[in-house]
Amino acid sequence: MTLIRAALFVLLGTVLLACSSGPRFLHYDGPQVTQIRVHKSARVMELMHYDMVLRSYEVQLGGNPYGHKMYEGDRRTPEGEYIIDRRNPRSRFHLSLGISYPNEADVTRAVENGWRPGGDIFIHGRGPNVGRPRGDWTDGCIAVRDREIEVIYSMVRDGTPISIYP
Image (cartoon, rainbow, N blue to C red; front, side, top):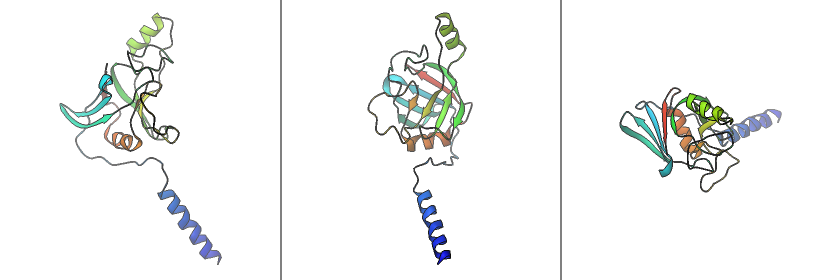
């Protein structure tokens, strides 16, 4: 009887693990993503292979989406040229790709004005605590659906340039 209970316990654990809502780590072997383009006014992010759009996604931005990020806490998404510089497989927003904000110009502008430039800007999913937000809701990040960030996470490598346009 103990052996049957143990087998049922293992089976139940396996079923629960298979049904978990954690991130899926997908494999991608298509064309290299050579650039990411984000068009803030259109709320669109494009994954590019040179001049060809590989994928396009609707995005949500910082809660104050107009204008360039100037200082920590302004809830704006930065504008300009950056790179993907890190990945977080344990993000509270499902998965996330770090953006190299602030760059040298961002730091200089902030220091000249007596501000802190902020940081921790990511492309990320929603995660289990966000639900179905309407409009722009992040603190300056670029958000997509959880299943979309799984695809993006598999396609984009560290060092990929990202251009964020107004």
